[in-house]
Amino acid sequence: MTKARDIASAAPAPSTVSATELGYLDGVTSALQTQLDAKTAKSTLTTTGDIYYASGANTPARLGIGTAGQVLKVNSGATAPEWGTAASGLTLISNTTYSGVASHSVNDVFSSTYRNYKLIITCKGTVAAQTSLRLRVGGSDNTSSNYGQESDFASRATNSSWQFMRTDNDRGGTAIIDMIEPYETFNTNFNNQTIGADDTNVDAQYIAGRMTVTTSYTGFTIFPQSGNISGRVIVYGYAN
Image (tube, rainbow, N blue to C red):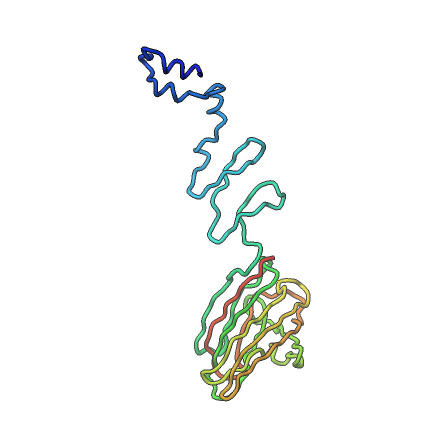
């Protein structure tokens, strides 16, 4: 039997410490204070969502909670955990709507944060005749005459744009466009898949090409050949 149990079993039991209290010491093999000092203090964690990690051997540390949508990953030096953007998938950059306008600009959505971007554009026209929906890229004010060289069309230098969808009165479709490295300072590529419609037909097309620009661009404008348009533009960034 241990000393603690021997004392607890003594008769009469010590008057200042109960037998139950002494029984709690059963099995102790080293100094209690030493064992307590080795424990990690709860005060290390100060905020809801904090987590423990080892900043060194036998050295507990606090990692504060991240922000919404972040994931836990290892830092660039592979020395500690950190919160950061997910390493795969798409991140929403912009979601805008437009109604009855001659053009719609989406500014300052391309940057060095992401290498590639995906645009999802829905649109319907207001002209009761088939018309083309076009896209022009440029700086934050979208006034630059940058244009695309399409794989199945001649250069769009005259229009400073490329045609990517056909629309009609209250009819249109959806385009999914990949913008490849728009923020790099060399000719970049694009491709898009489109389902559109006029008054009698459904039109499906795939277009790929190269942006004939040598500077980065940060935004774009969509506009019809004639009439007005209504719809939505969603921009996602690809994780690097």
